[in-house]
Length: 75
Image (cartoon, rainbow, N blue to C red; front, side):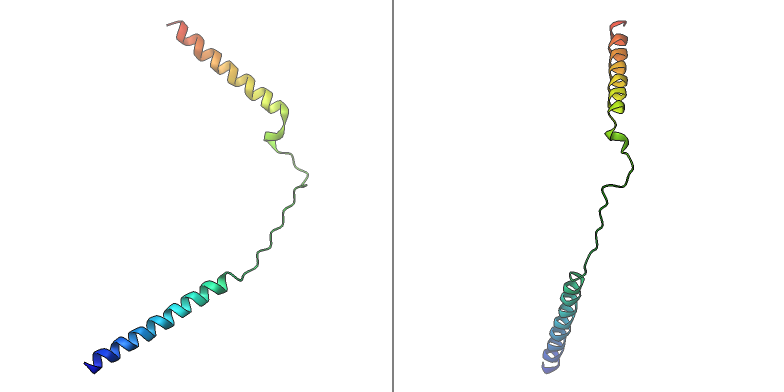
């Protein structure tokens, strides 16, 4: 009986040390600093910000809609 109690105590100590190691590692990982550098003026132009692309896209979309609707009426 005393051996079983000794194994149980050793198991509790091992689990406590393992939990301490886990939480210490978790806390250490939270201490890292992150360096974020955002440069919003990179000189490049974004293709989706150009107004002529919006116009061309809308025209193509309207042409496709008209072609689909005309195709249905001819049947």
